Amino acid sequence: MKNIFYIIILALTFSSCTEYQKVLKSQDITVKYKLGEELYNEGKYSKANRLFEQIIPQYRGKPQAERLMFLNANCSYEMGDHYIAGYHFERFVAAYPKSSKVEEASFKSAKSYYHLSPVYTKDQEDTVAALEKLQEYINQFSESPNVTEANAMVKELDFKLEKKAFEIAKQYNRISDYKASMASIDNFVIDYPGSVLREEAMYLKFDSAYLLASKSIEAKKKARLETAIKYYKTFLRSYASSEYIEDATIKYQDTLEQLEKYNTKS
Image (tube, rainbow, N blue to C red; front, side, top):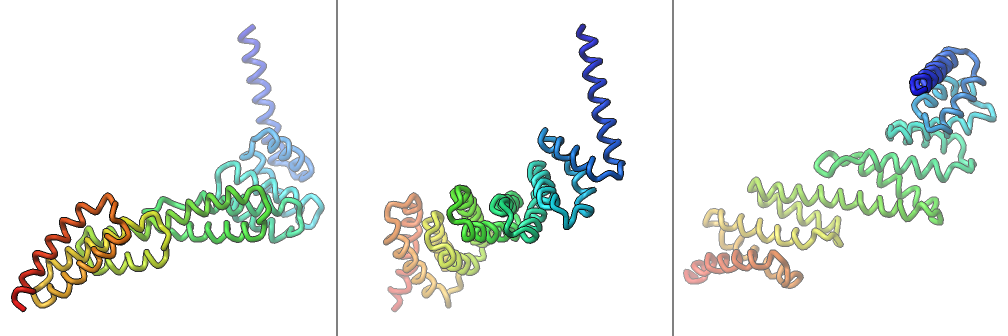
């Protein structure tokens, strides 16, 4: 009985595959549309997508075109092909701005761009694009229940850009380009004034100033030591309980000791 069961299953599977291949090669767009919908409803998005892609040009301008374009875009979305999904959903919104599916299509288009955003260590062009798409969606559909999720994605992507900018400043510090590190931190603080990374950034600015002063030639050392002291005091005022305060204070004391010999001379 078990063998008979497996034989029946194999026969049905083979029959199904044979039917699909037959329809795929057919010239009848109605049959392709019908089977495509059936496969879509069964969650077989890849097969449905192949059929939809074949018949979309023939249905252009017909009543079924709107639904067909949306289903095809959603196939790509469900398959995880976010680049294609975003493109198709954008085309759908442009073609059918009054459709009842516009809000969903706009959200899934923006979310597709969100999925394309890479890790913060890589180029963030796609992250910027995703933020623009999400903000457009939030502005247009401010009452949608999806706005909560959209805002969460915006927050996540914003932090990714913050992290990228901050890591650039840290990298300059690591390679001993202290001037570039301090300049990058200044830009970071301007661009992200409320960042959770601001505390570490302000410590890093002092650290870069301290290291620059300590390694400077005599002609520039005194002025740079004084600058480092100024940055330490700024850091101390804002973050007296910081986890970095002990290390900063040790370096501050060393800065004072280095500066003392210039004060003695004068």
